[in-house]
Length: 118
Image 1 (cartoon, one colour):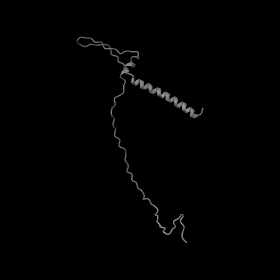
Image 2: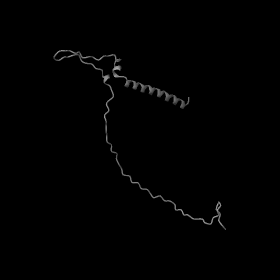
Image 3: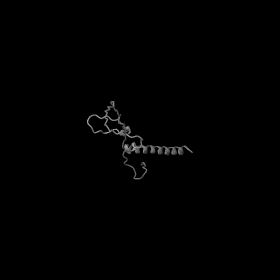
Image 4: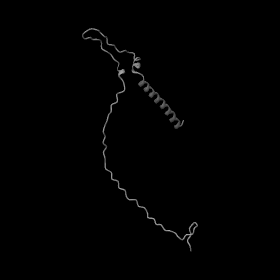
């Protein structure tokens, strides 16, 4: 097996693993927390309601922290960054073009290539 074939198989294998991980993250974030909590194997305690005047003390309330997990609210975080500035002076030398002259040829015959008259 040459290197190109091995790299192609390895790349496809990594793509499958990454796709499964991303699918799992997507599923966990879209399923309601209360539905997942049903499979946790424990139940939250409920406060007992007593209908009488005065203070009432009940057993300690136990609430699952898993239901509190969620995406944090977006808070705008603004920073001001002033980059250091250094003055740049550009010096361009003038472009020198060779001078050309135009010499008219009036005494040429109307054929090509030009020939001098003797």
